[in-house]
Length: 120
Image 1 (tube, rainbow, N blue to C red):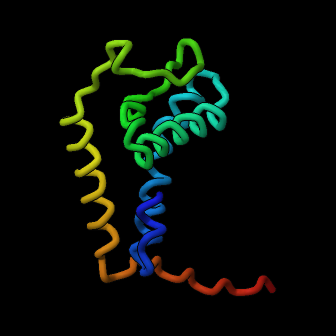
Image 2 (image 1 turned 180 degrees about the vertical axis):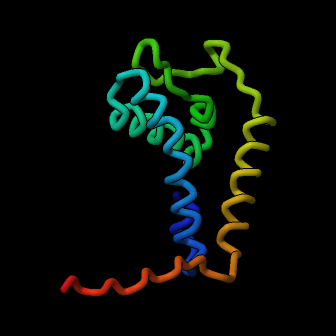
């Protein structure tokens, strides 16, 4: 999101929307756990933003959701190591699929319905 604001073109909108789309993942996980998704995701975003803007707090990038306790925690310290390669591949394939859909030059149009004759 921060990177999107540095651009002055239409790319800004695409990058901001992509960032919003990625937020769906932690939001839905929190909702599925019957937790307050708004509060948890806001705290998670605050930690991740701090890790990006303050070099001395770079270890906050490992912050994640603890859905059992309903808190935000350092997942690396708790032994949660996720397979980043498979996640990156999944995101890359999803992004490529979305870009392919956006590149379609032709619109799909439904045949207009035949005008109905008024009843006599």
